[in-house]
Picture 1 (cartoon, rainbow, N blue to C red):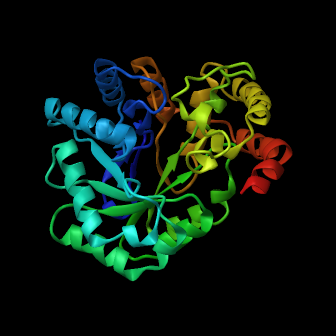
Picture 2: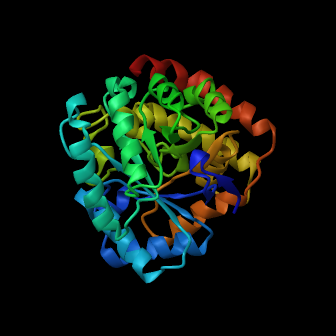
Length: 329
């Protein structure tokens, strides 16, 4: 497993982390024992970075990680959570009082005095220009409630505004073979500023695994069913904002390219390795529903791809994805 520095946190984390949205049961039901087995498998495979949020299963994901950490006190895992989605997405709700309430709740769920990294959870764009918001986050660092803070963003301009903030340690952004826009400005700016990049939705909600067809049916409580057009939250979080039928067809082509580039591994592992190889990416955070997925994802952290594969990915994006996705943005 490759290791990287997570931006201004100074912490060393695995190139492949673990996203735990699915452990909150927002992708269909997950039993507690199964969730803990996923965390075990990921850590045993070299993963040292877990990403969660206070709204994943209304705190269930945080609580499961807290239970796992109590059982593995010497694991050396960095845990990042997020806050800001427990109330309507209005600028005024990003206040010191709410930050205190949210952080205390997360500290309790995670079973820690100090949260390793807290990220604003895709806040309204106006928040990035509010000095008072970042002063309140600095105060949480000063009193020991959090060790560092970052932001999770939807848009490139939000990422750039966050990177310009002197104490923002990391930026989490959607980045995968179907979402290349951050490569142009965000990653170079982050590298120059020493800000870590956490790449989320690296498999485009599973599309890049190549396992789905136009006839695939997801559970009713899976966001890949109820948020395909942004009905519940930003459409970019589901299939990276790509129309499902378009994505399935492009994913089939990606799978063929992946098999040619690395015939002994899966398309999903190639997709993860490609994101992890982007200069400036600190950690990539795929989710996993079972231990086998967790182990397979982690294995991508030691995979090297041929130089020509990047050219092929960009060509596929330009031909099949760019026009459609940029229009939706």
